Length: 173
Image (cartoon, rainbow, N blue to C red; front, side):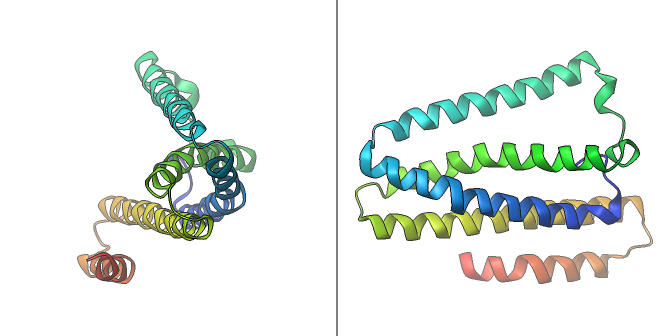
């Protein structure tokens, strides 16, 4: 979400998170469960195809960076709301592929379990990875904003970190 207005960052992350969770629960989960029941060998093929797409995305970013493509340097906030919407849709699309990869990896671990157990595991994985990604990017934006505005003191950073990360750390440890 580079190039967006600072006051729009968290609402945009929220929209991306909701789109991501919707994709995981309404698209990836049913398809993964059907594939695991009907053709479990396709799970590995999907992993390879998703990995190939993610490599393409990364190579494209590197290519544009090395080419010094200036079309991506214009901040989205200047381009207008259509560019913001395109940025959000692009982030959700990339997250769809990455989430599919993560959920298929989780599915591969529980493929011998019953259908209900597989569904429960995948729902838990979907919710947890969405939470982690949102917390990570929210933290990045806060720390970046604090580096731009030194008057925002360390108390705000500590408070944000405590509110967002502490419950997750307590659950996982």
